[in-house]
Image (cartoon, rainbow, N blue to C red; front, top):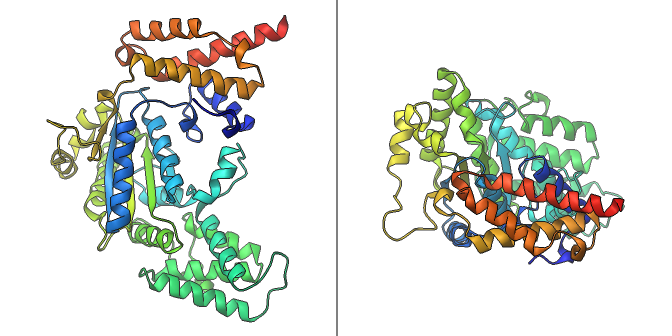
Length: 409
C-alpha cells in the first residue's frame, strides 16, 4: 500500500479531481496503480539496455479505450525519472498534430521533465516549468557552482568565457552543431548576462518561433529540419548528464480524424521515426513510446492505410509462445487486472482520497463496499463491458459522497 508521507495533499487532490472528471492522471499515477508489473520490468530492461548500447527504440502501447494506456505511460514516466532519465509526455491532437512534426517537437522540448523536477511534481506544484530551458538552467547552475560562485555572488567577466567553453566542449562530444548549438550557447550567454528577454526569445525559438539571426540562429525549426533537431535534443539531454530521453506520444488515434492528406503525412512522419531511431545517425539513448487503441492498428484509416508504415509494424515480433515483456508491442488488452488487483486499486484510491480530503481513512468507505464495487465491475466483464477509467471515477465519486455525508452530519 501507499505510505501516507509519500503523498502530498495537493497532489492527492489533483489526482482525485482528475479521476472524478474522467480524465487522465499523468503525475502521481504510480501512487494508486496496480498490476502489469511484468510489463514495467520489461520496460525497465529496455532502458538498461539503452544505457549500455546508446541506441534508441520505438515501442507501442496498445489497448482499448479506458483500459489504462495513459496510466501505464505515466508509470513508465515515473519509473524512468527514478532511474535518472529525462521524460517528455505529449498528447497528439490539435495542440500537437502528428502531421506537423515541428510542432510535436516543440511540445516534446517544452514538456521535458528531469529527475530534479520530481520533488515539485510530487508536491502538486504546477509552477514547475521544466522543458529545455529547465535543463539548460540546471547546467548553468552546475557550472556556476563548480566555478566557486555561490547564489547571489557577483559574476566575474571570466565566467562568460568559462560557461561557453564548457558548453562548446559538452556539445562537441555529442556532435551538436548548427542552429541548435548556436541557440544553446546564446541561451547560456544570456543567462550569464541576466538578459531575461533574450532567454525568452531563445525559448520561443525552441518552441518553433522565428529565426534569431543576430544570435547566429539562422533558421526556425521546421518540417525540413525537425528530425535533425530531435537528434540534437536527445544528444543534449545525454550530454547534460541524464541517462537518456523517454518520449511518450499519447492519443495517436486522433490521427484517424484528420483528412486523408494529413493522415498520410502523419504516418509518413511516424515511419521516418521508426527508420531513423538508431544510435548511429539518429537519436541517442532514447525510447519513443506510441500509445493507441486497437483501431489505430486495424482500421482502414489507421496505420495500415500507409503501406510503408504498416509493413514496418507488421514485421515487429509477435507475442506467440513465450511473452517478451521487453518487446516492441505492449498489449494491455492481454494484461487485464485480476480481481485482487482491482480491489487493491480501490483501496489505494481510498487512501489517496483520505489524504486529499484530510479525512480519516478508518471513517471512509469500508472494504465490504469496495468489494461490492469490484464485484460489480467484474460482473460487467471488466474491460469487455466497463472501462477501468469508469471504475476509478465511480470509486472516487463514492468516496466523495461518503466524506460529504459524514461532514454534514
